[in-house]
Image (tube, rainbow, N blue to C red; front, side):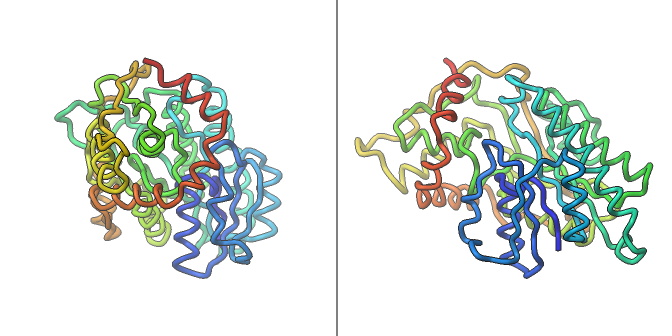
Length: 352
């Protein structure tokens, strides 16, 4: 059995669904169910005894300790985090509380649980911490991609809080011997993505006839990773990663934000044309750039391929088509998560 925290979010829910699709090992799904946590993601698991959902906060050490004692998981995979840069700029306190204080509470509970295990189980136990490439800061246009030894230079409250959590995980390994693994991923996209991030937001707005908001000049470059590739990489690191090591997970797909949106528009023009025959690209609207917007991220995932034999199965071209198709086929899911509160927040954030 494994414990997955933050498992009702975008990446966590994809991980749980893929895990239970590939094996019968049960999953304890611990999630606080904030705005981005969505139990509807697990509709296909209704009645499946391998999936045990528990609502709770990783920072509640007593609650986590009780779960660990009751279920005796062989591994903890920590996805739990506040993860949207824009929200961290408007309200950083939640990010410090969840990503720093919460991770500390989780580590304390896990350390006590692991330390009390019999020797054999203690040797097999793993704590895998899922982090982001944003901890490394911003790259110049011609600079080499981020490797695992790149200096941390976080530029937003979000990335600073994730950097702090990474340092805590590292410290618990070196100080206490906790068997940890850390992964730093690039920008994910795919099914079940809450529609405030670039790709799902633009798909949603395009179909609704609304502007497609692009920050600044749209030339911010990101390395795009299909979420199911990310999940397969995490499974591989959990299976065979070296203790205390960091593994960068990327898709080898550097794309400017404007190019990503134009690609989305082209696919939507083919899959679900506008009734007036015009391109969705006409809805692109440039808005005021956000403060401190990093210009470029890029992940060098060579270590992961060299040591563990992993590389992404999807190109950006294949992954983005699957993503658009999923959103077109799951409009009820989109309608259910785009509440009035969400609409008010996006209207406030994306101003001309």
